[in-house]
Length: 253
Image (cartoon, rainbow, N blue to C red; front, side, top):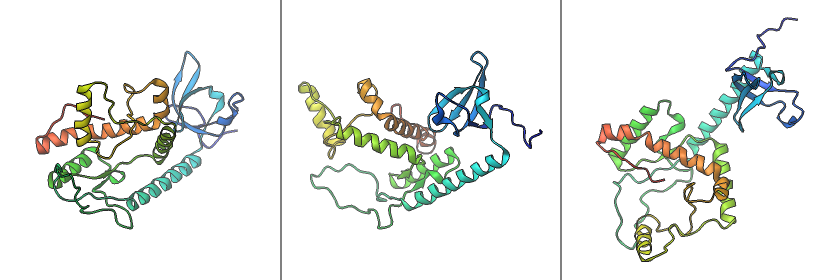
């Protein structure tokens, strides 16, 4: 019997898992067929939830056109929902130039969140071109000395990062920002505390070089979020140099 669509698994086709026995909990999930491994005679299928799996073609059913269309509608609805939520959660820093504060007394907050949230200078969820977004951010930096951006970060990643942070805090993994082991490092710790850590008594570094492997495994989402932030900062480099003549050689995460 002829079908209304070509139900052959090809690279780039959305497929549904079916007929698995050893991992029956995966049946019904939808993934993207990436490539066929000739040696293993398996399809590499990519899933948003947990990465790639190698599966037999007999366990993959290509989605029909109407299923794909319905799936895209659901994705569009979710993106619209995220955009609406992003506009509600907003923040804006003071428009004054950035400056060091040397007095012991902290100054008053020039402008804080309103009852309806905060007002960001740039909402990345609304930006479609990375270069244009970087230029916009640099323009705000040039005008005000500071630019507050809301990143276009998946809610699942933020939620997982929050849960990891709570677990690590409750597990007692947080400690002083810098640990002094001699007179020199004690002096260094005091200097950095005055510059960066005035209100940070207990922290946890998201850095594989600073943590034991068993602890670093507990911060996968936090590390992913941290790497995304680093990549975001790197993306500003060309615009900073072109527009303001500012360049940097290192990023301190």
